[in-house]
Image 1 (cartoon, rainbow, N blue to C red):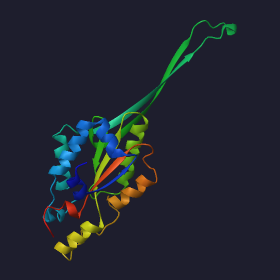
Image 2 (image 1 turned 135 degrees about the vertical axis):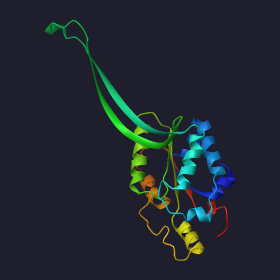
Image 3 (image 1 turned 90 degrees about the horizontal axis):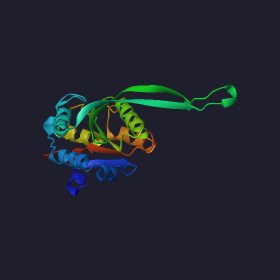
Image 4 (image 1 turned 90 degrees about the vertical axis):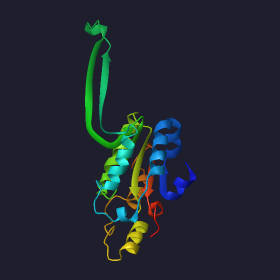
Length: 211
């Protein structure tokens, strides 16, 4: 990935997610790089109230939608076909074919394109991370996904930047919302199974102005 993007964001991955996403989904990878390259964050916007549906999140989601990414519910259905061969001593002469299926509904991701799923988790309940990772794992194991991407934020350096700008602020005092510190343990202990997952975190270095 381009050096300037490495410097402006915090990056983590499991299962060589960046290399796999670039190699298998070049167009989608270029979308991600372009959206991040064009993304700007001011200290004033950082201080605005709002959780995961803030203006910041909306800007990111719109940037991906403009490139063909869509919020998607991913439903799966597994069908089992049994062909029972005849047992002639019992008088059977024909193969009997039976089918049964199991449906799994309700996987929802913020953006889906090609074989990449992407979620923006800015200051939401940290349980959202379990949902995202569980979705990626299920879709990967079913053979429908090459990699998952989560865009989130850091905690301590953004809190320090907020305090420098407004010493009395309580912005980012809560540590139970989605951030990189909450995400990394879930990835390193293997919650995603074999699915490659890339984490991109907005951090103090992403700010376009100096605090």
